Amino acid sequence: MEDYTLQNKKAWEYNAYNFWIAEAGTPAKRAKDILAAPEKQLKRYAQYFDGYKGLKIANICGSCGKKAVPLAVMGAEVTVFDISEDNRRYALELAQAAGVTISYEVCDVLEIDLDTYGGFFDVVFMEGGILHYFHNIDAFMGIMRTILKPGGKLICSDFHPFGKITPVLGVMQPDGDYFSTEVFEGEMAHARFFDEEIRRNIPQCSYRRYTLSEIINAVLNCGFTLKQFDEHPAWSNSNLPGEFTLIAIKN
Image 1 (cartoon, rainbow, N blue to C red):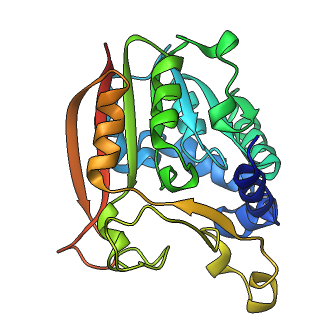
Image 2 (image 1 turned 90 degrees about the vertical axis):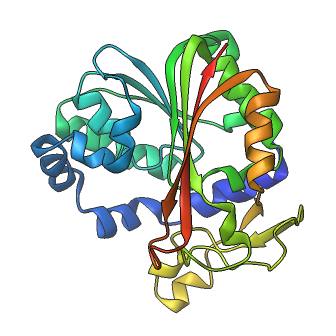
Image 3 (image 1 turned 180 degrees about the horizontal axis):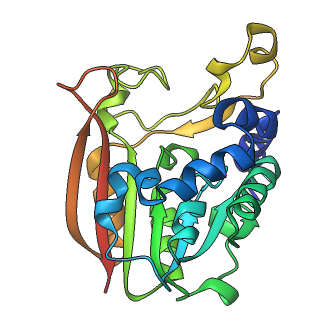
């Protein structure tokens, strides 16, 4: 596990379980919402799934299980890969409260056990902004392709690179240079929700932000066929791009 991954792990394990309790509610409360309308919990991402029942789905950096558990409720066999033990604790409690089972691997995504998971999944799914946690997007996309079955689908939704030059999402400050390849340190995503005293003590994450061409070329260069690329409005300004969703198939 590389040094920057260990740094990000410390940030994502800092009071994370208590954060999810405060932000998402207890696992029992969250489970009730999921069971009432599981597909609704997927939000816009539901349109990119061809079905759920019996599919083996890898949820990359699946955090607290907010998408993994609804997928499991609808019949998918879900494995979450995430770096945080605190995230795992909440996600497994959430799954139990919802009456389903998910698998949860706490690991560096770039070190997924390929003897176990190579060619294993029908779908690889990620959302919520994760690409900037990985300093080598080509290696990352290569792992995503390796764990998919032939013909498997990649659903990659992330922050739009437009945010490199303007704060459309308010999650990460822009540096003004769209083409920058610099690695830098910054607050982890949830730090802004904590009181200032706690916020100052949260370890920072190490980031590398990508351009659209870097993301798309990484997908193409590792052997995916790009099928669809959608841009979505920013939370703060619907006239600007805030997120995107990329759909690709393993050849």
